[in-house]
Image 1 (tube, rainbow, N blue to C red):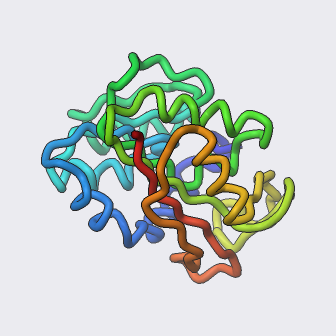
Image 2: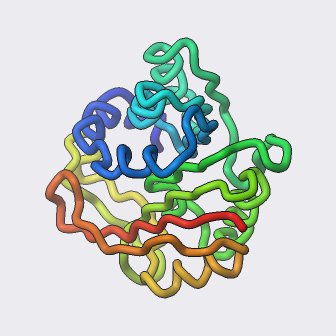
Length: 196
């Protein structure tokens, strides 16, 4: 799906830079390693590099990864499934998972969160943002690249996601409902958590 949407989709989401990146980075020790999960074309990864972090990006789209590597040739990018991450325990100081868990089957989400916990260092921080809602839904949006194409999303309630994060072993730092940065009729749940 995302390989087909390609460069046009990346152009659409370029305008949706999450405003909380700076605050998240400032909460981390200087020069922390950070895993950008579902890095797409490297939009957020580039910000981490500018802030002096040591990012690594993973995605499943070859088209997106080619753009990320072109954009940021000094950053390691890997084609990797978040459900089967090939990193040793305690590799990263932080994980950034922006609009990622909504692409995972609900029954696999606890396993993915445990994987996040595994590859984080002690006191490592986690950012998750997903669409608020219930169940699994096929939705279209106002992005020019996707047009009338419907994409499937796993939607979450705020308390549901908080509980999943706690069960995985994390301590919640914050949990908020935030509006869509592109002005679409979407509410997002943003959670920051810490490995203890």
